Image (cartoon, rainbow, N blue to C red; front, side, top):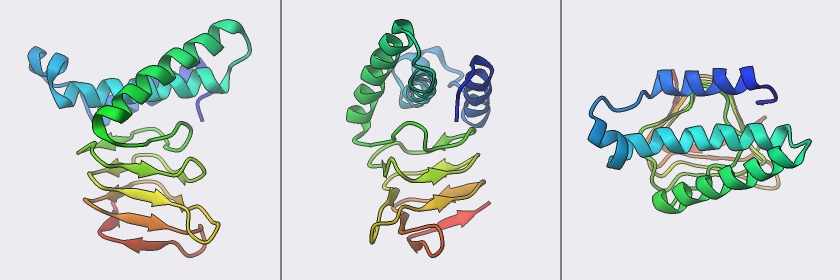
Length: 155
């Protein structure tokens, strides 16, 4: 959870280490690779301002970054809520990713297109560190016995 500026810098640094900016300046501006990096930066800044919302500045910054975050979620038809993923998030293909806001995912997680992390039978999953979710992976249920469909694997 991001609660300090140093936490925010660490999360953004680890996210960008896992998925750096595209080397081509044109791809940074209009390409999907640059959009994914910007989306993750907005996600982390939204988490920070939500977690420390003590004054008007943080509340307004939270609303602004939430607006930008939702813009990218609509662009990619995905839902990635705040305060779910640990540092080092890697998104290979950003389309159709659905994550329940009550679930938790550890550090250095990798997502691909069609991943669903959802509630089943009133329980949300807790996923550990260094997990890679391949195309169309599904994780349903609670922490004791998650039901996995697709090809989720531990790195």
